[in-house]
Length: 264
Image 1 (cartoon, helix red, strand yellow):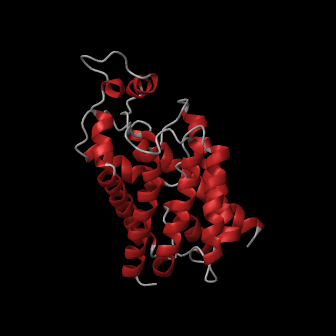
Image 2 (cartoon, rainbow, N blue to C red):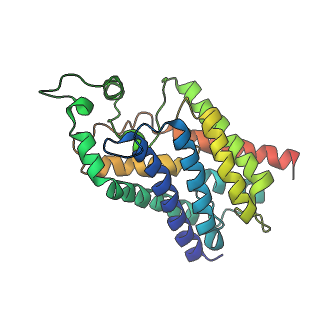
């Protein structure tokens, strides 16, 4: 794979991942969406199918890493670091593009949601929802969850451990079940397996933090949230932002180490 193929493949694939994954979060969250309040099951399956779709699209070009945790684990596994910066650049750019596309697709819903007095409060509002008040207290705006993750209980050790554990499961599953014949990315069957592993992680381990398990899945859209001209959008919760970046990278490194010791 050439550097240009890697960059293009990761940019397109990660953009699709965030468009479909962030899209299901928007569909469930925003007022005037037909899927509003569809629940956690819809979100977990939405993200699983997003991973699978993005992997099939980008696999022929880049091997469909779509996640710095995957890139790091494969570099540790094989000792090949040359293309790591290219993968990371494509992934971050793609994540930001995907988040912008979610905003474009749900533009009217964002406007309606963020100008609704029951959501954002303000003069003339009879009450604000408990969820909106809770989010404001934590420095996170009322639609930040469409773009990035956040904990239900703020405990640095627990939140970090949750992201490490979830990513460890994801990476170990990819390394043992999901790689293509060359071992440098997801294979055809591996993309399907990985999609269902993501669903499993979401259902079993996603409750505490929203299971980022992917640094750019969280960081790229969080940057976009900070930059977009959304009315009454509130904060981007930068105080928490390091956890869904560091946690997945640590989990990936541990998984790669376990793989090299136990399976290689």
